[in-house]
Figure 1: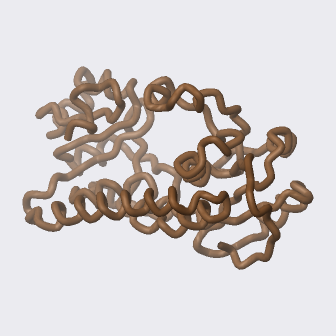
Figure 2: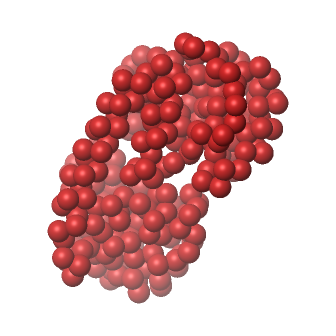
Amino acid sequence: MANRSLTVPESVSKVVSTSPPITTILYMNAPDKLGGMNFQWTSDELKYVPSQYQNYPNIGGWYGTQTGNYEQFLATEPEIIFDSVDESGEVSDVEDRQKKFGSIPDVAVYDDTNITTMNSSIEFVGKVVGEESKAKELNEFNEKNINKVESVAKNIPDNERKKVYYAESSDGLSTDPSDSVHGQLIDLCGGKNVADIGNSNSSSSVQVSIEQVIKWNPDIIITTDSEFYNGVYNNSKWSNIKAVKNHQVYLPLPHHTNGLTDL
């Protein structure tokens, strides 16, 4: 997907990826062919992972501030390694890793974490690993549900759209703005992301102050941090924010019965 020319095996039994989003696509397409993860699954995530897939080795990768280990990747004995390339099309890092991986083809995939446009990456990965029918099934599922969400969201009057703050870290003072990688679902579902700050094209969160959050006064707070969630209702700094006063703070974890999964 980066306009490089590579020769890949016609059929493969073991593949790995340097990037979590692409590894996730591989897991969805061909879990039996996946040779390792870039991260450690949490106990909550493992509740939804079949037992035969719970013990993938954590081989790290090259993303964010992480530093991959070539020996760990090569130790999995993959026939193909998938790498990421962004919309700029810059391939120097991919070419550098290809030299280190030697004869194992390092196949670049558009690292598209936008749920509305990632179908081409799913289709491409499915074709390379010989799982085209599964990729087609995944894309049809994705399109069906995106269309369903968008059909509902577009009918929400502007004055009824909820103001949402996405709280990250234990103090809740890291967030992601509208159109960012981690904040995109707020927009897709018809919410208004209150974080009118820059950095929308980054996958890194932005630090904000409690004064900013008070000024934004969100109707709803969504958090991925259980420590923040467990303490926010007893924290005087947050007590006057509408979402806290109305008990509209949600922790989207599988075990949390009143969380985002129930909205």
